[in-house]
Length: 167
Image (cartoon, rainbow, N blue to C red; front, top):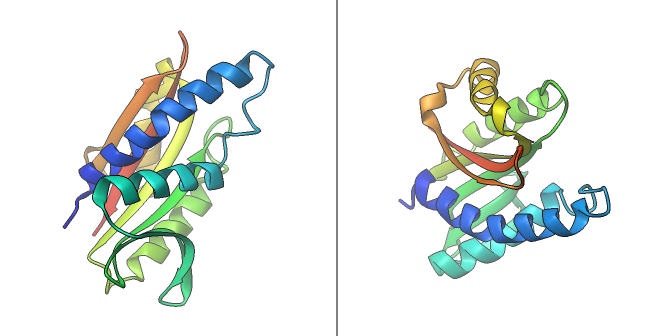
C-alpha cells in the first residue's frame, strides 16, 4: 500500500512550485483562470507520481467501465485510483454534487486497494478551518480523515490540496 499521505505529499511537491510560479506570473495580469484547471493539475500530478513512485500512471482512463482521473499501476494492475476536483465557487456549494458523485464512483472500484479523492483549492487563509468544517459536513466525512497540504500564494491566499482516503 502506498497510502494517502504519500500520494498527497508527492502531489503537493509536484503542484506547489508550478502553482506558485503561475500564480505570481498570471496575477500580474489580473487572471489565474488560464492555468488553474483540473486537467493541468492532473498532468503535473501524473508526472510527479510516476517519477517519485517509479510506477506507470494513467490519466483519464477507464477502470471497471468508468473513467478515473489518475491510476497508479503496479505492472498492469491499478493499485491506486484517484479522482480530482477543484473547489473554487463562492460559498463552496457548486462543487458538492460533483464531489459526492466522484466519491460514490470510487466506492465502485472494490478491486482497487486504494482509492483517494483529491480536492485542490485556492482560498483566503482566514477561510481555511471553515472550509474543512463545511466540507466535512457536506461530504459526511470527518475532517480528521483529510490529509492537507498548503502553501501561501500571497498575504491572504493559499493553494491547498486535500486528500481523502475512501475505504
